Amino acid sequence: MIDIVTFQDMGELSQYLADSVTEEIVKNPEIVLGLATGKTFIPIYDALARELVAQEVSAEKVVTFNLDEYVGLASAHKSSFSFYMYEHLWSKLDFTPSRTHIPSGTAVNLEAEAKNYERLIQLAGGIDLQLLGLGVNGHIGFNEPGSSFQSMTRVVELDESTKNRNAADFDDRNVPDRAITVGLETIMKSRKIFLVVTGQEKAEILSKGLEKPDENVPFSVLLNHPNSTLLVDAQAGRLLKK
Ligand code: GLP
Image 1 (cartoon, rainbow, N blue to C red):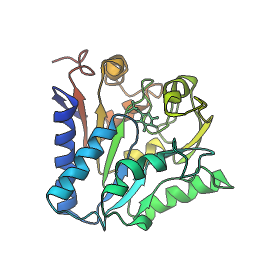
Image 2: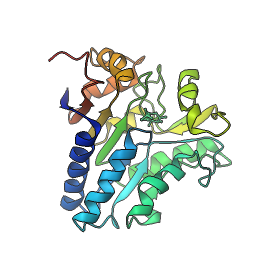
Image 3: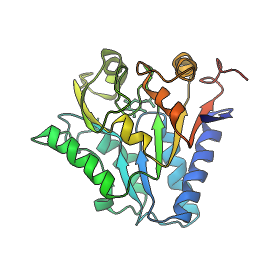
Image 4: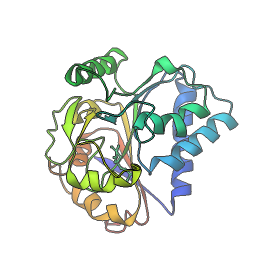
């Protein structure tokens, strides 16, 4: 089952999620957070940084694991998710660098990097709170349609549709063919999950994935999660039954 909370706009949604995450960090300053990237999360991280600063809550002991990274992009590359995280969240707060994790897209042995990342998540005790965005094709992280619900952290090929959509994030519009992503089984082991879906272009895939678990719509695996909540704006939620 997945609970659904609808918001009028992104501002309202961002504040709600920022408040919820802040509350969780206050309850457990050593919380293990799973983090997503994408445009959806820019105002959310902005609100979260503001909230933590306003409430004087430290992020020093928080542990983070990002969902994914492009293969071939160093962390200093402007279009890497590592750069995104630094720009939108890590630089604004007192996170401890050794406690923030993101797969290395430039590892010599990518398979070993993916395996090790999975191991690091387990060693940290798993994810307490996972934040997820949704791809227009239904992906979460970079688990593209057809990904096994039993998948672990691994190297994946990106769908053409994903590459087309993310091309705007690259100066030369040249999106890498591969990425490392945390797997669906790993995501499902998170104790609590928030899936954030906004904008009318995601309305169709959202209503499709909420019908039944289906590996062709990867996020639908969340229907089997005991503690997951969908935060949706009016546009993305327009096809959902009231
Ligand atoms: C990306 C990321 C996902 C993200 C999704 C949606 O490329 N791998 O983690 O949730 O696509 O992105 P956006 O918020 O820009 O629509």
